[in-house]
Image (cartoon, rainbow, N blue to C red; front, side):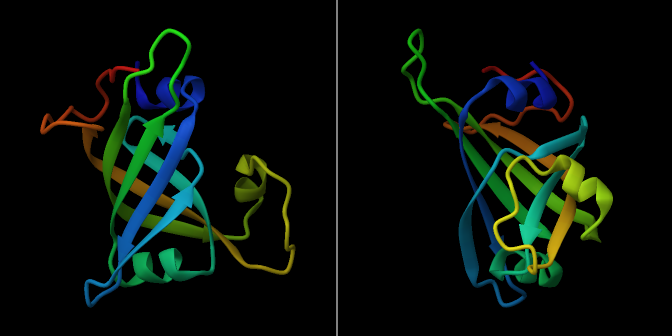
Length: 136
């Protein structure tokens, strides 16, 4: 299954790790990414620490843990290594992609696009080719 299908069909939880220019790391829960194409993902970000970090240092990692199912209780998921490529601020496309209602309409939001550099399984050292099928 490819990234778009994987994130559409797989329930789970994700964590985005970023670091500022000095290497100080931050981690935050993030919803499933919006899959733009086989090599590009986007996250909707508020104007907070993760966004500030990605402006200073474009490298990030997203760890997604799939929830157990009735037929598979093993630990599954993916680790995505990312590089920020561009962003949009409070655009119509951002609000069309938004999955949840806006809690604070005064807060600036960014649609941040990332190139998928590497895909790895949740556990193990294997690298999967970007654009290839991943297990789910």
